[in-house]
Image (cartoon, rainbow over all chains, first blue to last red; front, top):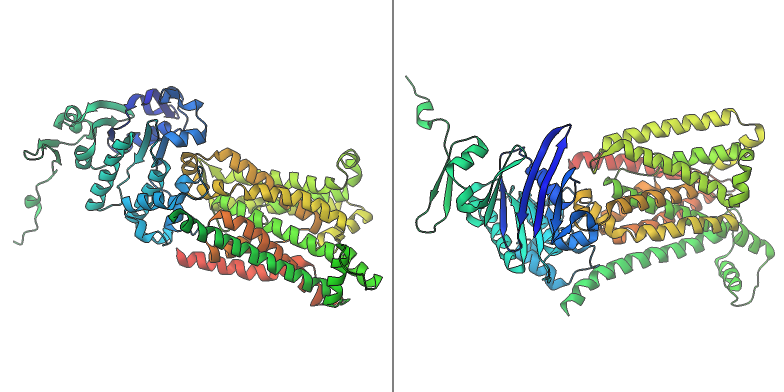
Length: 267
Length: 353
């Protein structure tokens, strides 16, 4: 289990993450939702070990984060940040291979092919990374972080994603979340910061709702995804309904104006 | 079976590129040994070399032997080792700073090393304790300290939160360079005549002052750090995505940074202390390698060493022959070739944005 207790982080005495408690079981998807600037990315950086937290503790599989070396930490968790920039002319395939750079010199061909086909980037493995579109780059990065933890291991692992679908069209978004869902069977727990509430509703098992550095609500989908709780977190009227045939939640935000009233009319 | 088929091309390219470059190095060595103000026929060159290895009979004049063995071979070897040092440290620093414009000369490593070298050359008598301790290694080690101080200072000025701001980096390099040049001037101002003569000999740079002793010291202070830097290729590959990403992948980022900065400064310091500041090799070489063979540091690092060695060996050959019997300082040649290349690079970057 990935466990965070009372983690606190502030910049110039302003709390970015304020005594947050969070846990992630292997084999589940936890969606972290909340308005921009709520501290979601900072939370992810603390969980990944990239930023030390000033108070509180993070544990992976019962062992404190501070007791892990970078190399042993890389074996239990993989991270996909929001933006990764490359200065040098690497090919897409070479970027994916970096995911295993620490473990082996060249990963087995089957493994690489499997992961890159799974993320639909195998066909452009020989193209320059810099020339790919935003969505293609994200798929390559996803393949890289998946490769790091793809091989089945006897211990639970975790995948931390910071808006993995931000540059993708709707079909790719669902495709990526479907891949991520299949990781559950590999005993991998996934924490994903998501922007799209409907995407979260369709794939996540649990939800943590963030606002101003605090976790307002954390729990099962049905408990947290309600009109009042979402409305409170985002400060915007939101309606949650349930589709009768698929039992899936549908979230709609209320429009602030009536389009019809503002149409240009000739006199 | 499939795993073997993918691995093969990667290793094959690497093997082919590196052995191709090595072959060219041997070729240029042979040509360079025979050419010069005093020409030695190629067959005599091979006779002398083979005889020194204990093969065949030595059918050559002692004049041929002295020119080849005491003058030419050490200077060619020194040119190659220093060229390799500049090439590989350029590649490593570019990888570390994630920028193709970085070069030991531009970010102040070379001038920091030069400053310490000049201080030692001019005020050598003040360092008798150190000289007694380190002998002939004192000058290169002091140059290393100067280079390391500058590179750490520039790095601290330009970096924060895992990112390096390139305009800050270049600005910091300009400032450090200007300060170092001013301080070198100040040191020269206080130097006596004998010290100035020593300084002039050194600052004209070039590899003319080579001897076996220098080749030995350069081998130790450059080849070992070069091997360590090559072994860091995984860390540099991961770092090209960013420090955070490298950490996520399990790289000990601080360790990689420390080893790249230290060993690059050591190589550049040793090189500068023996040949003076030779610019642009560290800029051109890694760029050419990346342009032709891609960005994987597994190949970029060793290939940059070999191409740097090749470039400086050719430069030395030209420096000795084009104005023969006089010699042109090699730094002038590399700048004449390097500056237009640098301008072309800037032009390219502008167009690609």
